[in-house]
Image 1 (cartoon, rainbow, N blue to C red):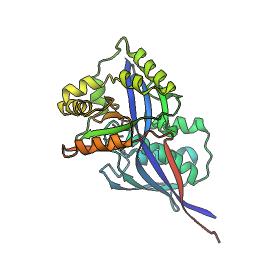
Image 2: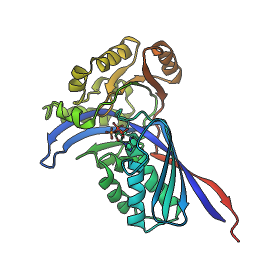
Image 3: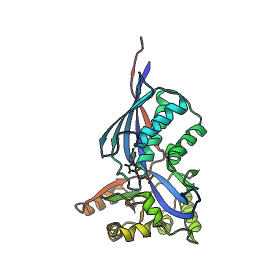
Image 4: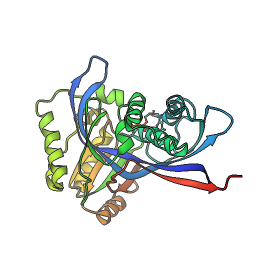
Length: 301
Ligand code: ATP
C-alpha cells in the first residue's frame, strides 16, 4: 500500500491575553501569552511531486500569495531541505481570515511540516521539527502541538497547559488587515503588572476557572490598535454590550474574541451581530494544532 497524499486540517489560534514585556535588540519583542487553538481551520492537501524536489502551491478560498511569499511554500522548502524528502504539491483551502491575529500563515506552515513528515514517513525528531518551525516564524512552534500553552520569549518558548473547556469563542474580524509590525510599534511595552496578568490567566486555565480567566484578559497590543482603528473598539464594545463574558483582541488584531458559555450563546450572538460588515466565526477550543488524515491508499505493483 502506498500513501497518495495527506489532508491536514490546520487550526487557527487565539491569544487569551498577551503581555509585551520588553523590546529586544533583534527588533522582536518578548511576550507572555496564553495560546489557544480553536475550531476554525484551513485545509492543506499534500501530495508528492514525483519528478522534482520543488514546491507547487494552489490556493482556494481567501486570497493569499500562491508563490514563495506564502508561509506554506516556505515550510515545504524547509521540509525538502531539512528532511531530504521529495518535493510537495500543496492545495491550500484558505478559510482563516488573513493578517487578522489568528495565526493563519503559521498554522499552514506547521501543517506542511507535520504533513510532509507523515506523507514521507520521515519520523523527524520533535526537536528538529521545533527548530525548523522557529526559523519560519515565532508562532509556528506553538502551531505544531497546538492546544493550550503559555508562550514566552518571542512566543516560541512553550509550556503546555491543561485543555480548556466550558467556554466557546465568538471571533469578530473587521474587514481590514492590521500588520503585526504596526501593532507592536504602537504597543505600550513593559507594563509593570504584565507578568501578573498572564500568571492569573495561566492559573485560571489550570483550574478551569472561566470567570477568573474572563476577568484577567488583557492584550498590551490592544490600546494602540483600538485608537488607530476605531472600528476595532466598536467591535469590542458591541461584544460586551451583547453579553460576552469578556472581549479581548487576539494577537496583533484586528480580530476581537468574545467569550461565551456555550455554542448556542455563540450562535445567538452571531445572529445579532450579522449585517455589520464583520466576519464572524463561532468556535470551540481545540486541543491539537492540526489533524492529519490519509487522502487515499492504492496498491503498489
Ligand atoms: P500572526 O498573528 O502570526 O501575526 P496573522 O493571523 O495576523 O498572524 P497571517 O494570516 O498569518 O497573519 O498573515 C500575515 C501575512 O502573511 C499576510 O500579509 C499574508 O499575505 C502573509 N501570508 C503568507 N502566507 C500565508 C498563509 N499561508 N496564510 C495567510 N497569510 C499568509
